[in-house]
Image 1 (cartoon, rainbow, N blue to C red):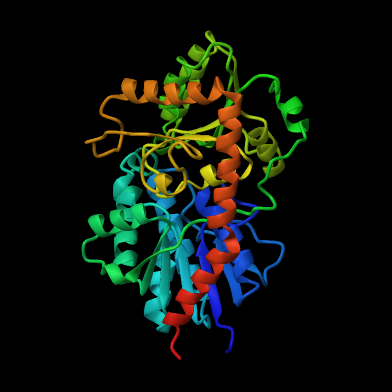
Image 2: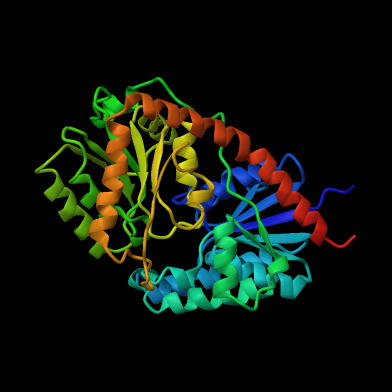
Length: 400
């Protein structure tokens, strides 16, 4: 069989990766490249291997930092991207930033359009703080693409349910669940401690770690409240940067300053090299994921692959990763609010702290949960299997 030529469309691609969708694209394309012909089309500066990845800049005349200009810059990149994918047998877009390019390619060239839904814009209303009027644009693009794509990949069963609820016009048969994955060789327990020494982390203490962006979605403010109730003497390590807005940046900084009056907090705001993140995960006692919205939660896989127990909110796709009482603990998040925030934030924070303390105070329990987490990741989330499932979907869509 002739290997189909596939165009992967994404805002993020190394070295410009800042979120889970970018990690997904990086590893998926690497594995797909061993199975078929793949070329990435992405945003940003020219990449070192243009035959592997072609990058696009916004059109001239749209410079500026206003939110609506950011949305228009995205659309201008999508126009250029759509022109650049001509000749591909199939286009596969990731996130609203690239979905419009995929939709245009489908219309212009008559090729199948696959889109992976990493999140849903209507379920992220706090993005209006960041994008202003551009949020309406992002919702329009997502709706247009998801309702007309030949296939939609949901990164979890929870995500598929959300898609069919938010977009009832999408036929259930067009939505395929293919999980995110993990590089099992890159993410594994690292006995080295150079990163801890460099970053001022005391490995002799059973510290709690969080890795993620500073955004409403990730629930950082709830973690900082929960940390007030951690077992005395237990430090918190925050690998957290890239705040969505100046407002949330100020709020988190104020809460960290307040928490530092009570306990040790190591806040690493810059994007850390992957090797350092792996070492920091490897020596922690427990990983916490307090997200209020998480279609999958790839960072939980990264922690589990490093042998770390996980305490996480039971939202979105997280219960498909973390097994209650076996690889960690799930914290219910009751919410009737449009923004997904807990109805009782204080109770949610206390529940997080209770489960964290349960692990922190029992080293043998932490070891058992961590080992089970590594086994689960090895059994279910290897990128090679995920790439094979993705290619199978491509081949079912590409005409004979």
